[in-house]
Image 1 (cartoon, rainbow, N blue to C red):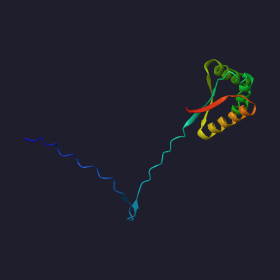
Image 2: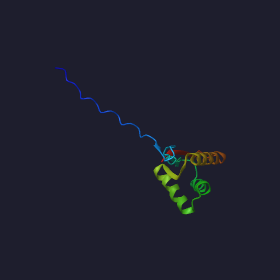
Image 3: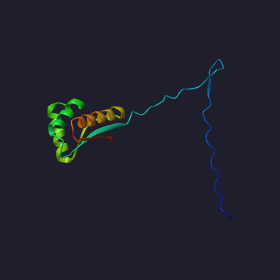
Image 4: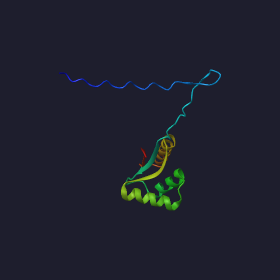
Length: 118
């Protein structure tokens, strides 16, 4: 005897629109939910040629960090090879990367700045 699968239950019908007392159709609106934008971290990479003072200046000028925070991030970059300067939306992060790289090239330093998904 071949085995028969039990029939699957019918799919539930979509909710029908309601009618108000005047006979007009009332459709309930679903609220649209948007996701917050993805955030990106801006990262400076260590090299053996860019002066530490220049890195501190970049952190102060482009990331609005105070001297102490800038120095701590610069030391992290120096010892660990990379350091996060801040977390921003995609447009802001890419602009900061371009500003840092162009300032480094203008002053003749090979400093590298990248952005990564946070």
